[in-house]
Image (cartoon, rainbow, N blue to C red; front, side, top):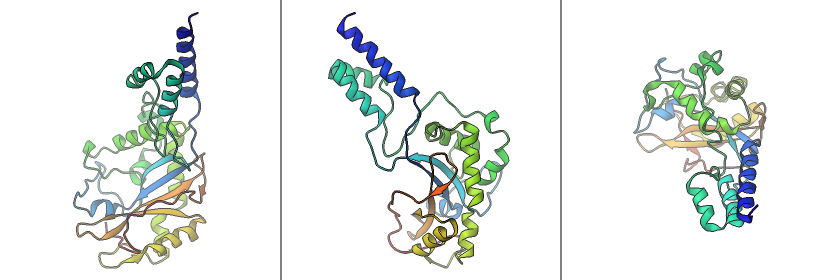
Length: 261
């Protein structure tokens, strides 16, 4: 067998092994968003076809994440192709998508052929409508399109089956009700009150036993408001953990709002 042929065979074998192994990541972000902050922007929001959601934190997604940013599978396999076949041939494989996907600080789109099916989550739909509603004006208010997108981008990298991915996110939300946690600390939706970012962070840490990351956005007047809470979860998607990474809050200070929804 010619050396070039051997190289091709070895390359395709390695690519197949890489694509079939479990996705490697370090933790999940369970991301929940406050609907009042989603809607109280210049862009606004649209309610799902099931009607206006409750004034409660809603799930945005459960996202596999790396503790340290790394070169993605795509670049690692490009390097391999370049070493074995030469840069020109490797470029052809890259352009054709034969060397896998590109990672960032998280894996994404790990199996485009594994589309979410309604049957897989048929017993969860009522809970998903309540706890994971879409507020985007894209998609015609159909939450299933939102869930499908989250599954395709993040869930396919979770090493979980479709049902388990959504069921575990729902269970975590139910076990640690952020709306109730904040209310217990005197942090309730208001059109006039402001709260310190540190009081929100402390309330969540005291109630759950674990730190979380917070993210703000801006209302129509440019004021900072609590938008999303990033709780960190173990790789099985079952238990909260302390967040191994900090992230920019985008709050611009310690004073934030929690707008009425």
